[in-house]
Length: 211
Image 1 (cartoon, helix red, strand yellow):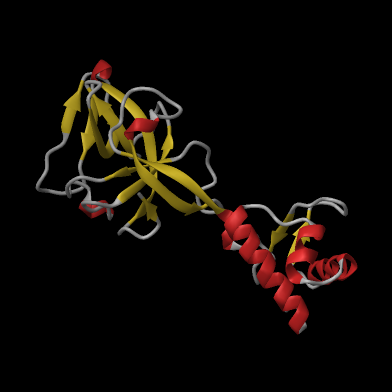
Image 2 (tube, helix red, strand yellow):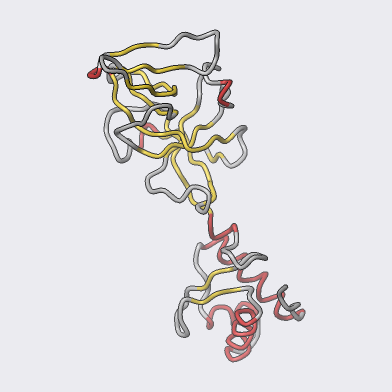
């Protein structure tokens, strides 16, 4: 259990959290001293106390960069968030898609979704409902040009239509299988399908979406 903070230490910690949330970077000692109306030495001493008590972590003695830690010593959620694009229409081409096809952005926890160049795709319809993927959900995807059997993937059909289905490779064809008995599996020639990504998570509802 971490040691309790004094009133002044808590004030400085709250200030740091707000600054990092707004500016994505920790303030300099000079800036913090001016905005908190305390001396440079007092700020440095308080930063050291916060570090000793396990509330922050500095990258180096003289580094401006510091990290806010949560109750278990991990990065605070405010510093773990990252923004990924919500794609309105998938087109062929990796690792990223044309900015004009973006329909907004989604904030996700980088600890849960650590990959690079992730994107989100809005689900249309309920063909995957038995896999817990519903109409208007946002599927968080890792860009990929290949798939393994039984993975849920984003596939581009005939270079035009994007779909989210479970992937199966057969000797003579590719099967894209829905997770809803009201829909039938579809079979495609190898050159009719381009894998664009693997679904690694689902976000339901508009929270976190910035349009």
